[in-house]
Length: 223
Image (tube, rainbow, N blue to C red):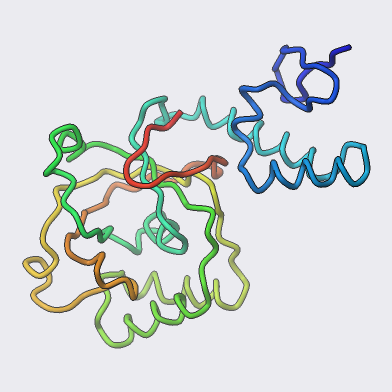
């Protein structure tokens, strides 16, 4: 006995005891998959977790057709709130401890648009407070008059940051050594070992709505 995959426009038939087709199930974030399993084992019935999985996959499918977002496009996952700070124009540089142009297959990304993806890890209160302290002390490369009120609203609970979602695209510039660029110590976080190179990010284009997706380390291909 089979039933149709519950994802919109999907015509695949799946066997009894399987909620959705394999292709769409792979698009469900791992924590949500676990929640679906747990709720089904507890009740033996469809739950809000099942419905949330369908909503996430439908949103991801809608994102596949989003202008400017194509399969194979290079994507970079950042922790929050730094991903959102890029998207609001408050973070003109992404700091890393390596120069991606040292790798020939990545050097071609200079001048290209990449997808900015927010990781699944929620920000910590101490991290948010550290960002504000660095701005106040003049040790941050963030645009202060945009970043500080935004972080304050996150701390106050007025803004809920999207997690495990693609937020938009930005144009990636040529990495520069941080000390050559700023001539003094600048850090957007307490991860000082990641402040060796400043990667310019500009011409930010947020998506109309975030697209759910799992992330990865380094550059990865949007699919």
